[in-house]
Image (cartoon, rainbow, N blue to C red; front, side):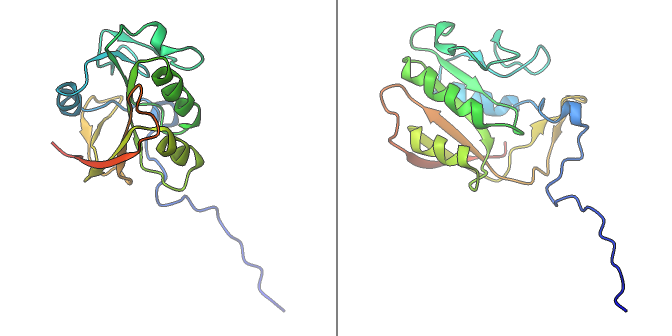
Length: 173
């Protein structure tokens, strides 16, 4: 007689400990915005709320319209999208940059995801983090180390889409 085994569902090692309603609300650390602002003249935060926005003009729900319609000429859009569902945001990055407005977005470097390869093919530059970015906790406002993945900054520069320059950035302050 064989023994019946009961298997319990096991959470993957990368499962979030953050409450579900807060998982997609992590903020970008100000030091990273300050560093990027030396290079990019941002006008819009395309995925934020009143607590974690980085610029006066921000969108709580940045999908379904062209950000370029709201971004002055020569300015850039910052995007730290919900990491749980990045795919539709890639189309937004491309659409905005095809309308002559630049986009810089930070996401986890999920190299096995289809959206990652779509973004990599379309971007003008991809900068991989050296170290991991400590994002800002949505409830406490404090930076939290221990992100389980490295990050990538996708740069979508108008007129340079598809160039795919590869670089790095320091993921820690």
